Image (tube, rainbow, N blue to C red; front, side):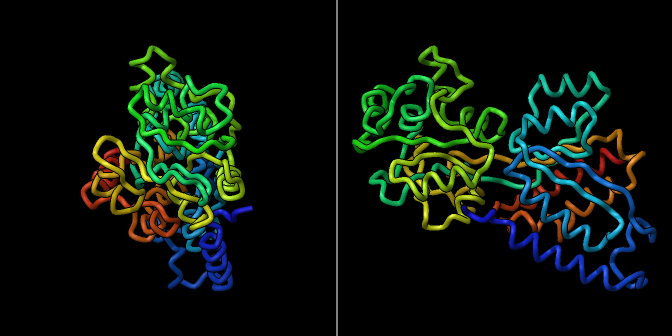
Length: 336
């Protein structure tokens, strides 16, 4: 099984926290935060499995400096996270897509006005086996393999005719097709559909919010990686961090969004040339600021130099300076 790409870093941060614990109440210890008072309390964070590695590492760093704070971080999926958040069950919701109108309404019905904070960038990465002969796919190709009209295709070659109809390159090999990809609870699922499939599905009067239903869905990105790495017919998509951690055990397909084939990378996300890029977020419940003394210091830390460094440390893409400044301003406004 592929080790989570951020686990080594989290373990290192945990080691730092143990060292800090040995320091006791040294007045020079950086754990004395929040205007000279030690931070206490607990935080419950849930949501995106894509953002979970970033938040987990930030949490371990924060804990190393604030030993009296307990932090639980879970990654069941963006949609599941928003459900908990809008019910008031979590302090922060990790999200690999922006909150939608129905979720905002659910939050507001419970008196919650979510504070949206962009924390990083991601390249949705289409992966397959290194032995696969295909190197680049258009949105039409992706629609022919993943879309609602590909239902029942059990060979890559079965998608060739549909690919030709929708502007794809086709040329898929005559070999079994085994898709393992995120399920509907995942923000990665929603982002992939919105960016690559939605327009084609709408033009063809097909459902524009689903993948084909006959694939194996998994909330564990490592299962998706393992399918591509260990299966010559494997296909899926994951966040950039997981694909990078898998290294050359998987093929990372280039994607042509209309301007030529582009490989996923930090540079192509930042310059906007990679066509399946997206923002990563945390959402904060402002109602909990008064009642939870750990919440404001934690988000402050998340947006500090040490906190935002975690984005690149787990192989995602750091925000450009202007967007990070906007995220910090949004948080400062929420606290005012």
